[in-house]
Image (tube, rainbow, N blue to C red):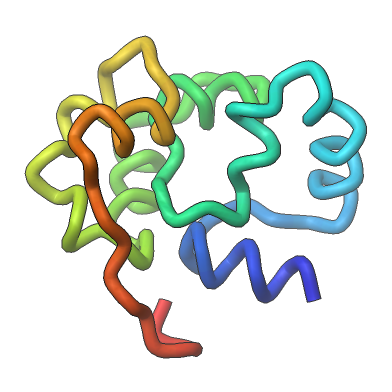
Length: 108
C-alpha cells in the first residue's frame, strides 16, 4: 500500500496520513518536485518539509526525520545542506550524484 511505500522511502518519522497523501495527490501537479517525491529515495530538504507541512519545523523535528531516513547513511555528510539549502532534497541528491543503498523491509 502507499503508506508502506512512503514510509519505506522516507522513514518511519515521516508524518504520513491518508489525508496528507490525498492532498499531495491533488497538489502534486502544481509542486511535483515536492509532493510527488514521497516515494523517492532522497530525503526531503527542510525547506520542502516546511512547505509541505505548512509550518516551520524545529531543528529537533527535522533532525529526527533526517536521522530516521532510510538513506541517512548516504546523506549524513550533507545534513547542513539538506537543512539549510533553498533547494529540494531531490535537487541536492542529483547535484551530488548520490545513489540509494538497498534497505531491508522493516529496517526503516
